[in-house]
Image 1 (cartoon, helix red, strand yellow):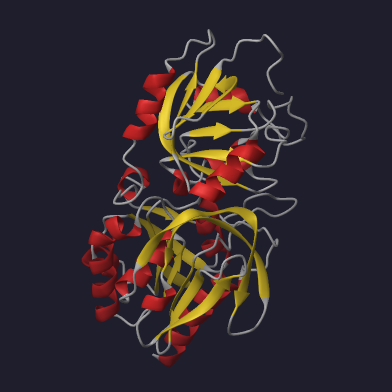
Image 2: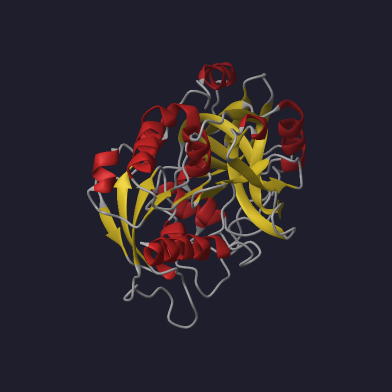
Length: 388
């Protein structure tokens, strides 16, 4: 809840332009700086905080009821929160959900993530939309002692996401196999036992549920680090190559990822499927360009039109960069566009089973509007096998 008159604030959010917000801190104490974005999703705060694509960002949640269902181990998209911090309107209430295994504040504190409540998130969101995602510093001190000038200086000193290769920071340290499938009532997560295809997934910051969707589509998944070479990919003799989501500037990660993709595609006709950062890097590998967006797309209510079928999907998005559709070369078709702003949300090669989307088909906002993409990837591997 907002601060009571006369109550001393225990958290402070300072923007690079000098704007200051005071509130009540929870989670870890200390100071962090990052890019500030907003997310419009009404559910999934734990999945959002643990999504590696949010590295280098503090998240403002526009939905006020954050923390009301607590936390649990099944909803983590990676082992620990990756987002730098959390901004909410109301303090988290006591968890009320049969799956809750803990409280949000305790969970954040144990994992070193700072949060602030009692903020006018509507005002903050309008400012981000109008002026772009600002650099910010977030501080939590139970005694309420803040050096505001120093916080503003830290916000201004943040390097920004342009030119930053953050995939190296969140990728796996070594390769591993994945066989866990999507959650289903009443058994929860089950294991893949009848895989039809071998898939190498490049981890630029992969969410666990993406890997589960691949397994549920019949894939035997081997995950490789972001720095994997074409030789390392081809050594697994895969039927398909998957390019995961991830944080940072695609052009920076693309310095080593693009040559790998180009070499794999030159050596093999295997299907290639990319999501989010994987989509952007694939576009770069095919000759297109990417651009930094004003405030990006972050939420679970984004309408996307499939230009080839005319259907509209309600999607989950999390990206601050986009593929410039005007830069797509001949032979690469735009397949999906955002109905919010017309930005590119999907591409495919005209003559090869190579495609990608900007949004997150694994996140179930529709709830299953976009799962067909994993099935399309599996079907393309089926076709290549049958034509061989």
